[in-house]
Image (cartoon, rainbow, N blue to C red):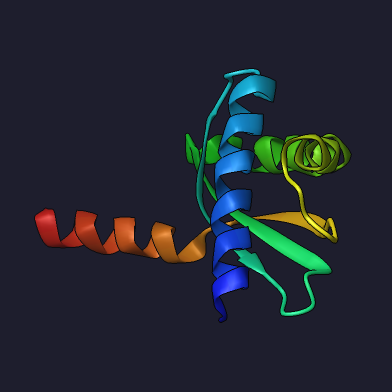
Length: 106
């Protein structure tokens, strides 16, 4: 990953956190853990964790509905040549890390 990709990735992670803080209805805690950007900057994936786990499906539906609003938010806040298509996914790596921690600590 080159320097520009890293900068865009960090920028999108921060903007996603700001957007979700302002748009969330607080029925579940949605935390942005990371972002990934394709090499051609056409696609970006925002990785999140959701608490409680029972709310994951509802929260993911909320995030999918808010994709257009997030794209408009990024267009207003960032000076990017190309605004990517955004997708949200649950950060499975973070979930696995939490599971391992709970097994080790018990």
